[in-house]
Amino acid sequence: MTTLRVIVDQMISRTPGGIGRYTEELTRALIETAPRGCDVTGVVSASPEPDYEKVRELLPGLSDLMKSPLARRELSLAWQYGFTKIPGTGMVHAPSLLAPLRRHDRINNQSDQMVITIHDVVPWTHPETLTPHGVTWHKAMAKRAQKYADAIVVDTHAVASQLAEIFDFGDRVRVISAAVSSKFAIPVDATKRAMRLELPERYILSVGTLEPRKGLQSLIRSLSSADDAGLPLLIAGPQGWGDLDVTAIAVEAGLEPDRVRAMGFLNNADLAVALDRATVFVFPSLAEGFGLPVIEAFSFGTPVVHSDDPAVLEVSAGAGVAVKLSPTEGYSERLAQAISGLVSDDARRERLRFAGMDRASAFSWKDSAEKVWQLHADL
Image (cartoon, rainbow, N blue to C red; front, side):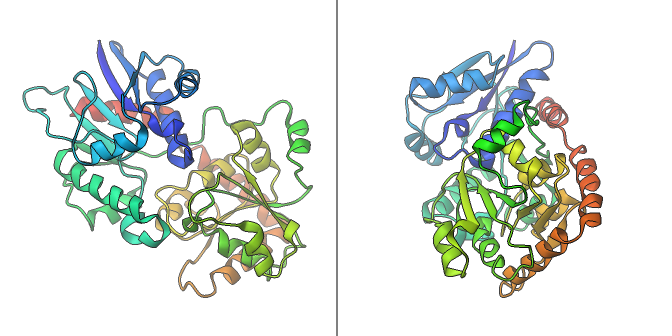
């Protein structure tokens, strides 16, 4: 039996974020598409037993779960400096830069291989939007990847191009996209959930971790000048770093405090209901590697306004309304204009509804997983 060991630790991180969703979905698809004679094992840091149970529940068919004796913080530091490795030999797939990158002998043992994923180049292009520790750690791990990784997966051609300006990975880079969750569908109790979530009849929705890089400050400020019939803004996502207080930003922008509501983390079923019923979905992120919430909104036919970050433009492919990030001055006003244009134009929203659903159908976790298996076979 050939085993693919996948680092699934981001799934049980305090703030899983987009990488946590990516890890879960890709690993589930890897299990479902495993070639004959292959299985998938998960690797996690030392964690409470309920976290282990969560991974097993979310990833049925996982052959085993390898548990490091080190907690997440200690494990990430150990791997940053090349200490410790995971048990056994064979293929390792890391859905992020959290990986045991070190010298290995793939020449004499072709199954001893290491593939890592770099989702974006934010630590180099927008370091001010991350914590200093996060920037240092990502840069250190990318340097280790340059020395020791057998292949580097990126989500978009935009990231591949940006990464090539920073590192010379040669022909080791492969573009393998993300996709909409296989579990992402409108639940049978959608109306009940909408009532519990207190969803208004019409509203603007945004999804993302509450942190500076997501551009939420600009979005909130845009409401003060948008001709959007006073629609409330709902923001779904966990609290990140930077102490982003959406209510304080709203008040500072001259808005009523209840005009903006942070909903916190939503599970798949609740998020599906929120996306499906939104009048407009806005993704104002300053820098991305893919922009998964964009195609999630597309999949429900919800019209999307998004920034013109290169990766998001690639993913959207014209199915949403792009807003220029540059110059920084005026970004909020440009967002306001785009939002107003959609809110007041029923025919345009209807056109975007079909364009978005068509674009979302171009991405598949099954296809992505099969490409990962082929990548490891090619190595």
